[in-house]
Amino acid sequence: MALKHAVLAALLGGEYSGYQLTKIFDVGVSNFWYAAPQQLYAELTRLEADGLITGREVVQKGRPNKRVFTVTEAGLGELTAFAAAPAKPLLIRDDLVVKVHAVDRLDPAPVIAQLRERAREAAAKLDLFRQILARLRGDLDEETFLREGEHVGPYLSCLAGCRLERETHDWCLQTARTLTERAARTEGRTP
Image (cartoon, rainbow, N blue to C red; front, side, top):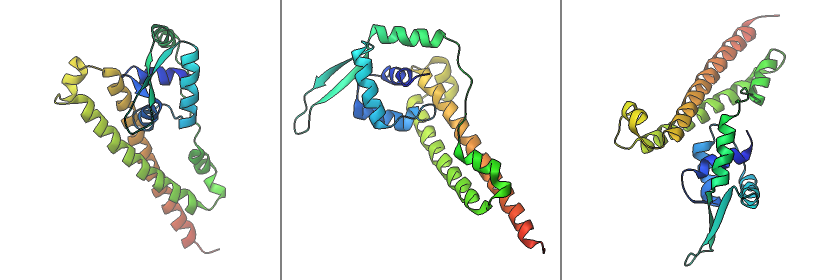
């Protein structure tokens, strides 16, 4: 997947400015794609030049004008081709997991602290995703929404984010607990 596909998918939700898109990526898309604001602005420029999105200027009183973007038919065609292509396997590149992998030869204290911090971050993201799910669902219960609701794609991808953050939270706490217990046993030994 390229950043362009994530941007096109995010723009399917409506007409957004670059600033609004950075907020969407920061909250709703961050569970499957991270992009810095400058990457998003550069990608919007490329997508517009390639005819995959179209932009228009919105005049605002008392604020600078802004450009808002929507997906074109060509952009929808690009997403259609992307959706039909075989998905690549999930790749994980996580420096904290590398630290855990090497912890047998390291002082575990900083790794334990980072695991606990990551668990706090995962819990906060999980709360945020739950709020997004509730907003998307509106007055419907989850089963009814999944069967009859509009915009089920963002809901399902947010559910994936919830599962990822829940698993991350649990793994981090369990790993921190294991390392803490092992460190306590090691410190209790006499040479």
